Length: 113
Length: 110
Image 1 (cartoon, rainbow over the protein chains, first blue to last red):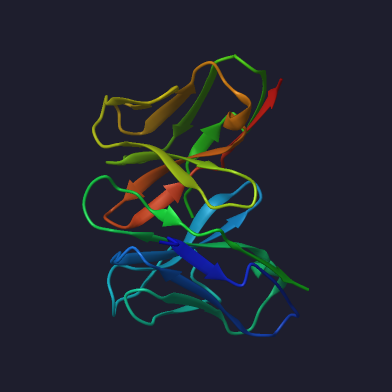
Image 2 (image 1 turned 135 degrees about the horizontal axis):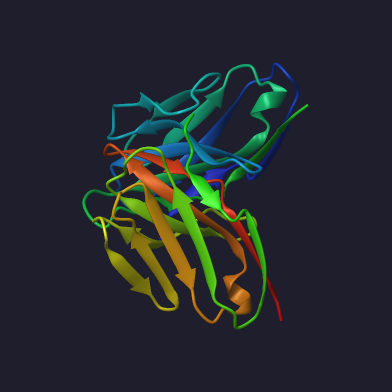
């Protein structure tokens, strides 16, 4: 039982390049989330998927797209990377009901030069 | 976008001391959560609070859901070296959206 896994762990991109961050969970959770974490800013929600087949914008969706490939997998795509997207990206998942707990992956550290 | 105001931003304490931190918001939340993040890892849930006035403990940690529903507090008693890390508060907006504070970085001198 690996929980939430993310690939890659580190990535360096040049401005304008594209890439997809992968996330998978093995807890049979319905909801999945993508956050970015910047120094002194806490975590900010980019997109989320409340259930398979649905996606919704979070607080900072501009410059990103997502795909809920199946119940296990939720990917985040940067079509044309910008230096402002340099950040640590976390994927999370959650089951239903109480307690309300989002389980986080280990993160992807992305640098855009 | 809105974030919660968390204070203090950093704390430097001696091992064995008690720690207090808090989180405030201009809007009401129905659920408050406290997370801890270790270096290079994702946040891990410490305590979840669901009712105004609720006081919940998890070992040496105690958290309270403010009566106005606009604030929450976390206390750590008798700190130990493994308490080092960044502590985040979060409020749940609707059914899905967590809003996080900026974090409190805790450093402990042995």
